Image 1 (cartoon, one colour):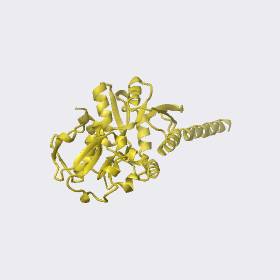
Image 2 (cartoon, rainbow, N blue to C red; image 1 turned 90 degrees about the vertical axis):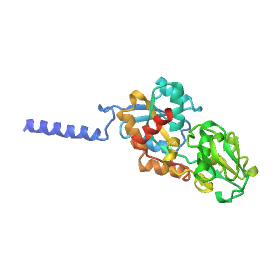
Image 3 (cartoon, helix red, strand yellow; image 1 turned 180 degrees about the vertical axis):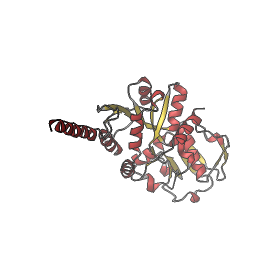
Image 4 (tube, one colour; image 1 turned 30 degrees about the vertical axis):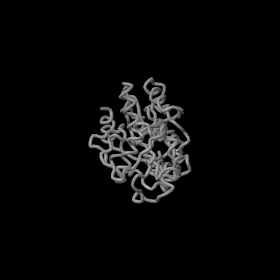
Length: 288
């Protein structure tokens, strides 16, 4: 009888341990794994949700905030952080190409559509011959603005147009629109003086616009042409298959996080789940 009780107690103990480890502490031995993620602004509504979900699986996420767009990649390359989540594929590919650091995208996060805004018209069809349109002047956003104007049917770009090209690659401009490059922060401020202005999603929000409602034309997240402008989670190349990091990507891409992002930005940003082939393919194409 004593032997039976000992076996029973052992069985109950083993079941209890299995139940405690059911959430799957990510290192397999029940200990919490700490992961530092570099961000540029940690006030997004998605982060508390992600941290709580990860904690239930034995993953403690620490957000490390940076005020510069280059520092989070440098910190990742130097091993000061484990992941970062703040940039588009296009920006990341350019950084990797120029720096030579061995980093990889491991998951997609959000897409913040760039839009065309106006105080004078309500539809792109109302633009007239010779109208002025403000566009950002930094290479990435200027090229993106030109692609937006092409998708709106206002201009045609050369077949060899690249993601860092400028207005010299416009092949056709039927309305002879006058494009005015300027710093991105100025694009909303000049609206009284131009027919329309191409404004970054974040800057539009800062200027009091609702990107989902106020843009007269905006990028379509279902179009593959916008993949370079999808934001990502990045890791060092040696960690691209790390199971803990891949699990963080999976948790980020769940519906509760998607809803938090949409609600937090009033529909201005949406969660996008690119396949691994789409993610890596876009990254490798942009590095060439």
